[in-house]
Length: 95
Length: 95
Image (cartoon, rainbow over all chains, first blue to last red; front, side, top):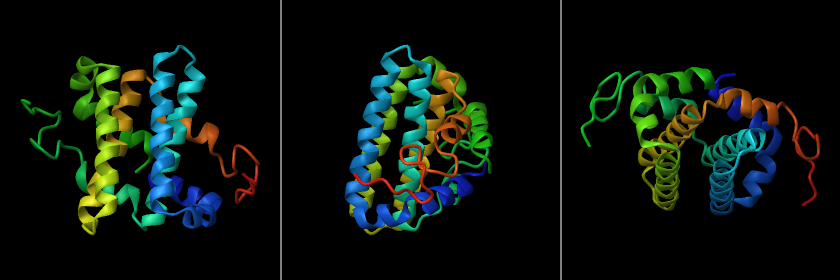
């Protein structure tokens, strides 16, 4: 599924709720989901970890929907087959 | 671009570096990028905000690459045209 299709699916499922909740509260949810992903990474339950990855990209898409930002375009504007810092493919950054 | 294609691009660009950095350090980078997104959301620079969205999905894909998790499959296993909690489309959860 394309990134923008996933974002559109999230919009169909959650936009009314997301827009009522607002930007800051939705961002706070995203932070909570990232924290849960971090906890899952410490464990051994692979299915649980996969679900936390799903939640993070889902809440990121919800947040982008509230902001009216196309996540796919934003991603490809910055990352388009080369490192945006060194222009290398693969990255050759020395930091 | 499909989610798995974006993840594969991130793998081509960054996997050697990502795998050397390891799971916890890459997760810490993801947290930093989410924090930067939160700061951008408080401002008015739309282009900067878009770049922070790009960074979050990029680091999420890097982390999934280290874990050997297919981000697209994980996302669609949980979110597949209905809310995973209430099964509604759109979501009808009452919480």
